[in-house]
Length: 330
Ligand SMILES: [Zn+2]
Image 1 (cartoon, rainbow, N blue to C red):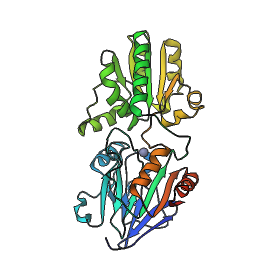
Image 2 (cartoon, rainbow, N blue to C red):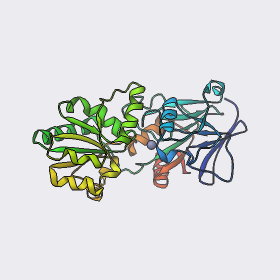
Image 3 (spheres, rainbow, N blue to C red):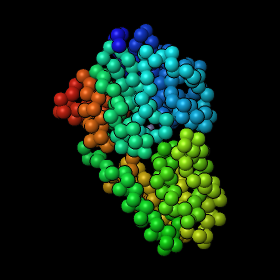
Image 4 (tube, helix red, strand yellow):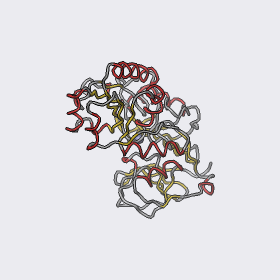
């Protein structure tokens, strides 16, 4: 570790300057400066470039697959080995392929991307290097966001869903199509195997990529909004749909036909959530760390300075200062 590192924001893009290189972090677009490298922490759309550009991109193998599945073409660097003295990708919990960027500058810098301290990938936070500069998200960076153990919440949901199925109801299970929906299926599949299981095409696409990387999700019948009507008066079924379809008129109409809607999102902690998206049940399960998880991650990394990059940046920075860290919103 030798060269110093500089962190700044250019035109809403977080830029790390190191070894005469500009690395742009999870940028959607840029105008004023051009990157030498672009780092993509994972394949959620709010972390991806809008257009296919010819700049060199660093990401995990899994993220490459997902970006290609989204129809985007980037100039991915195939062999990161030549950069091994400058940076490293560190596996983090969030979704398949999520990585933090560890820059081996003087003292070290770590950019977490989206991160969860307890999740499916069970990498925890103990693998994170100790660095002097930490860049961390704060999606749930307020003390009122405190999640119970995800396994306990999912068990509670599973019991409810099984009970409803046995009473003859069918269930729409709603989650974010990439990440959350796969994590739900990996937990629920073995319990719902005796019922008919359906999946919306945009979820099915990512199921296939999870399966390629050995997260075996049971194959399911694909179903779209038009073919849903075939399920009316059918056997009790489980149908995985993207969360954004909860308020769709076709989906809502099924509530008259013995179907219930069950949503899974960290925002279910907000009392208004269930009503605002018009579902029957909502469970707070997230692929992000809650407030206390975020504090725990910062303590693990034990940096000299923290930049908070996303979410409740001001109030989480203030919370970190109370904990004795030098912290600023970015
Ligand atoms: Zn994400």
